[in-house]
Structure formats: C-alpha cells, structure tokens
Image (cartoon, rainbow, N blue to C red; front, side, top):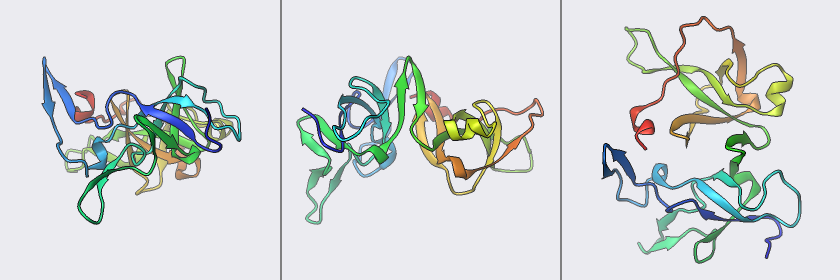
Amino acid sequence: MQSIFDFIVEPKGKRYNNEVKVGDESLVVNSSIENFKFINRNAIVKHTPAAFKTPIEKGDEILIHHNVFRRYYNQKGKEVDSSKLFNDNEYFCQMDQVYLYKKKDKWKALGERCFVIPLANDDEWDLDEEVRGKGVLKIGNKTLSSMGVNEGDIVGFKLNREFEFLVDDQRLYCMESNDILVKHERKGNEKEYNTSWARSS
C-alpha cells in the first residue's frame, strides 16, 4: 500500500511527549492538547510516496511538522483528530512536512533545511541567556557545504527564524540555507546553549 504523494507514518512512541524524567521519576509537564510544543514530532515511515523517489525508506525515523499528529478542538468544542489521520495509528505526511531523516544513527536534513544550536551569552550585563542571531551549525546540507559552511561552524542567521525542534535532547533552530548570513571565525571560548528542560527529556 502506498499513497501517491504522501508518506504514511506512525508516531515513534506516543502522539504527545508530556513527560520528562526527573531522577527515577516521571513528571507530567503538560496536560493540554493545545500546546504544540509537546506534540511528538518523531515518526517511523510505514510507506513512501509512489509518485517520486526520496532518500527516505520504509522503516526510517523522520522528524516531522507538529500538525501531523495533533489533536484539537473544533468549532463545537469537540476534541478531534488531525486531518492527516489515515487509519488507526497511521497518518499521511507531505514531503514539505518532513524536516530530518535518520540514516545509520545520523540525522540528515531534507532539501534546503538546516539546524543550528544557539550560543550561550557570556555577557554578564545582558539578561538573554543566548546570543541572538548566532549559533553553531549542527545539521547542514549540500548547499551550505558547497559554500564552505559545514557542521560545527559558527554562523550568523536572520532573526525571527528560530523554529524550535528537540533533536536528541538538544534544542535546535530549524531554518533554511538562505537564512544563514555569515560564517564566523572561532574565538575558542564559544559555548553551545542548551536548556535544562531539553536535556531532561
């Protein structure tokens, strides 16, 4: 069975990630279906699209848009499933809703997407915990590599492009190649900034 244009996927685990581990205990951090930040974005591919070939294969783990697994309240206040629900625990997922796919335990970006982790702010007079518009490229792509911008490089990026994803317990910003503005030289004292809630998931 194949969809013509969409992947058919299932959640890796539950549809919502509402719990974090604190020591040996589990803590429920959200009980609402409305907060998109707690929707599971990790999916397993059950079937690939029939209309075109992709580097993604059946059984691969992918990172997808939060609306695929989302539940919400309709105009009558009734809790309903996403329009992407196909059958039981399977969902349709469009190509442009896929951000990352995993091969041999390594995440790879799809198309022009890339992922950046912010830098910790070491300015004691600044209340922001991270440096705005600057970070480390954690997951690159072919376009950036062809321009000499590689994973591990410090980059400057456009403001207000901070679309958060939790990838292997790291809070990363998803953006595209043209959001990367400059490659900075390393000074040697830069530190990546990762929030404690991301590390405790």
